[in-house]
Amino acid sequence: MVSQKASKLGISSEAALILLAKQYGIGTLIYQRKLDPAKQAEVTGALPSVFASSSRKASAPSKGNAGGNRPASLSKKASLRLTIEYLIHDPVLLSRCRDLLLASANFDRPINQATLVLEDRIRKKARPATKLVGENLVGYAFNEELSKTVLRVASNDPDDQRGFTQMLRGIVPAFRNQTHHHLADGSSERTQCASAVLSTCCCAW
Image (cartoon, rainbow, N blue to C red):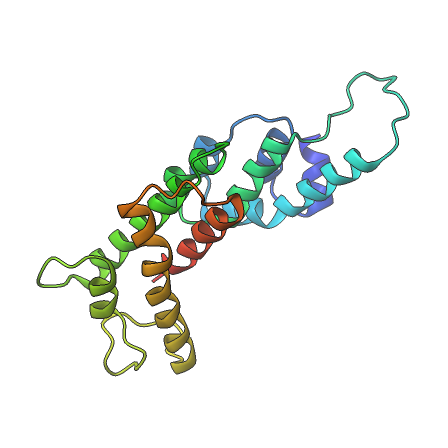
């Protein structure tokens, strides 16, 4: 099975093994972390095929299971777990938010953790001389003009710098402040997932 999947997707046997394990709901995080970056990228790139396969099995009419060994379609929670692992690339963010994203309530908690990771990453990279938090930290570290900023985008593109700076300035009042100082029980699943993914992108600074 591993060899067939590896050949079909054009990936290594290690990556194929992980994909098969995920389809059967078997945890793979520790093994996956030990793989070299190229094989980890193979797993991430091939994960959509798992979603597609599961979707086809779920929508196909039942014809019985004479062999008794046909893999069942993914459950909603297993599918959500795969989606989280596919979208969140940062290992620190993933380890802090994955279990919270799978919860059935209190959706402000993953937002809290995602923005905490973001703020910690900014602080460690910018190294301000005094203790800064929230909007003050973002204001110190980022400027829309490349010549004036402490942290800049890897592309050195002025439009990218302006866009990311504006995005970061919006994350703090919209997401970080609300969940660090209040119990935001009204946060929806869609909001918490969007916040986590957005923070993942920002953690690339």
